[in-house]
Image 1 (spheres, rainbow, N blue to C red):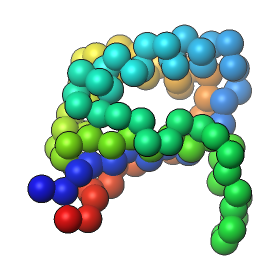
Image 2 (cartoon, rainbow, N blue to C red):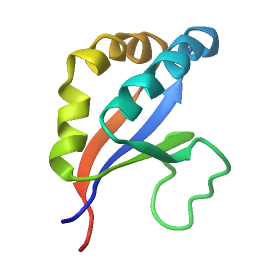
Image 3 (cartoon, helix red, strand yellow):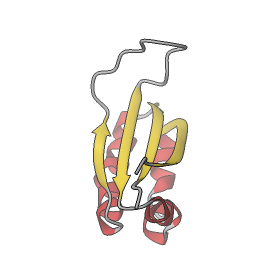
Image 4 (cartoon, rainbow, N blue to C red):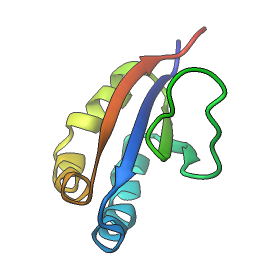
Length: 97
């Protein structure tokens, strides 16, 4: 079965407030079997338009589990922290078998 991925492109506007999100979000991710593959770090655009400065990639056992995590009560309880301290785009992607 193919894995599920959550990919986020984020621009942090309030680093102090975002720190609260960074402290809380991993608890819900682990609860749904997810792990961080990318959590910020060095980035270089090699084709196309530059993206937002922070990229996050989460891996889950399946697409459905990734989706369940995002819409879960646990994550929805902390996602407002991210929204208040940043803007960006997040999407779900099914991996290749």
